[in-house]
Amino acid sequence: MIDQSHHYVADHIHQLKPSGIRRFFDLASKLDNVISLGVGEPDFVTPWNVIEASFHSLEQGYTAYTANAGLLELREELSCFLSETYHVSYRAEDQMLITVGASQAIDLAFRAIINPGDEVIVIEPSFVSYAPTIKLAGGEPVIVEATEPFAFKIQPEQIKSAITPKTKAILICSPNNPTGAALNRDELTAIAKLAEQHDLIVVSDEIYADLLYDEEFTSFASIPNMIDRTILISGFSKAFAMTGWRLGYAAGPKAIIEAMTKIHQYTIMCAPTMAQHGALEALRNGRGSVQEMKNSYRQRRNYVVKALNEMGLTCHMPGGAFYVFPSIKATGMSSEAFAEALLEDQRVAVVPGHVFGNSGEGYIRCSYATSMQQLAEAMKRIKRFLDK
Ligand code: PLP
Image (cartoon, rainbow, N blue to C red):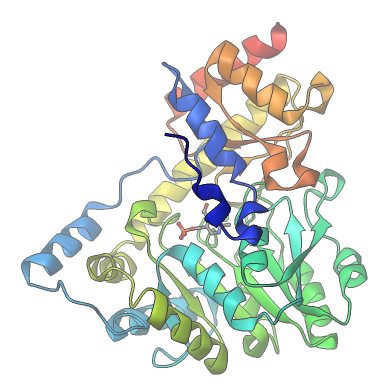
């Protein structure tokens, strides 16, 4: 029977394009012997002590809902973690919310702050969910483009010229997905000045904070006067290799966190209880594992950047996360055509840059969160593809 149900779907959802990353995964999953540099998640399994703590919580019968905002004990531990590690101070009682991944925190942040027609400045290339979540919240994403000549770091003048009377917020993500670009304290301070001058909120997605390789991370809220206008978003997926646990959090000014909690209360109730128990152990005893994974990613990053440049794909050295974003412009192909042909011809899956925004055209995203052995084989295959 032909499915006729599409006419029931709301108009604004019809207009929303499906994620380009998914389409590529689907193509890759139909082929054998594929090396995937496509997925944005660690190849490591969650540290064993975290898994055990979660098992243990179930054995002890912790199978009910937690408080809407999440276990107070977890929020307290997080509050200490953020203060010790990133020098930002949040009260566990009313300034923190445990969410279903950073993804939910992003969604809640926009739903909590956006009035119809409000504009949010988004720096592209960016994580695929930003513009759609802003639109779903009734807002208007205003795109500014970070470009290769500036190592994919946005220039403050670009943000300044995108500000209008309707601008409500600036969304930043450092280290960035897909470029790996990381803004230093001075660069963030320049954005902070604009936020202050124009009375804007800054939504700071810091999910890759613990995967910054060559310098110390600056949390946006640690910049003077920013704590009262920043929504800090992060989670356990990337640094602790816990993508499937679906656990993230938001920290911010009381009224905003209360607004986010209200929506969370009615739509989710609480993040998964067993995952919260695991996260507690991750914060208490999992940081050594994060360091080990980080050292391994650093080694892989250095290897991949060198290999890509040597084969003629210009690739800047990303400061953090686990992605490289080489240019494929010299091949004369579009990023979609390049990624499709590479997959078909050499069975290597990468993500075409345009799925992260128009400014990503001419680039591909390769995740190096896969073993050195797989990376070496992938580099060999990409070189073979280019030699042809
Ligand atoms: N923010 C960025 C920049 C990401 O790259 C991702 C995942 O790829 C997320 C948020 C979502 O993370 P989570 O698994 O915590 O929902």
